Length: 190
Image (cartoon, rainbow, N blue to C red):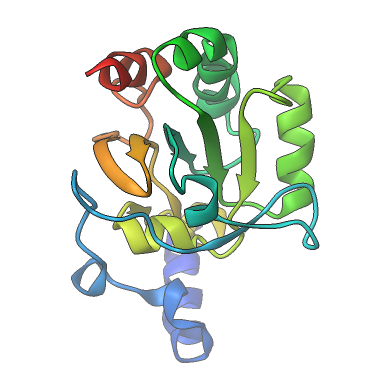
């Protein structure tokens, strides 16, 4: 198969790759938990000129933040993002002033995905091309053997004034058990 070749290429190229490509679980940040602060990471909406600081988005506000490995990936596209778009009114009623999705893509792909999901005016879909949020929050999914670099695990969180109130990280990266919108609606009400 192709796996030995991928392993060989990774081994040979390791000295030349940026650290984030070769980060081992040992030097990762520990997984974010309730009480932790959101990282001040610059994200992009629509293009590289439209920068949004994550901590500006949730400053003095309560809301839902969720992260996905990538735009147009099957679970994220069929279920994850649509659950938040469809439940927009319920999320607002439960107290969400901001609903934001972070995906590890460039802003153009992210914008096309947001448009295809009819997220405009409901969910802010933000690009994190260097996977900085997942790295800072300790929710990196090492899938570089398939995607070329690490992505974000699927997660969702209730944020209040830049503090993580609850966080749900999918234990298996191919499932969608706990980071779906219904979980967040219940947690917002608490």
